[in-house]
Length: 202
Image (cartoon, rainbow, N blue to C red; front, side, top):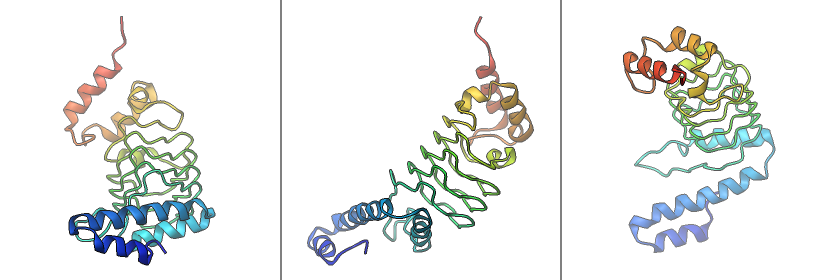
């Protein structure tokens, strides 16, 4: 159980403004502890359960469990629906995220080293400062649909902004991002930034 009776008693005896915070903190602590002791398949099952019960999306009308720092190494999440889920700052190294719906999901500062993103839907997903080293199956058009890749470590270990300065990165930008804007900016301002980062020092 994520919440025990004693935890509920503590929350009920606390001021109303603090009760929700107490329950969320206890649920988070117990969830992270449970995840640490599970195998990869069961970790995936727990994440699906939490998502289906609405606990992985911030919502003012019900509780939210932050998974920040959670060990989800190798989690089996193939085909899962994680639309708008908050998976920021989690460890998803070697996870199977193939065919997973990550539309609008937050993956900020998330470790995805060696994860499988084949056919995953990354539309409007926030991958800023995520580690994508050795990610499998991440097609150019998938990455182009992300909301942000600022500060991310790309597939071959380069920082996103440095990668944009390479011939490969510039070609990707011109093919997939130019004209559609990036990170909430219009295309002209994005192109100017790319041109600035591409300038070589004298």
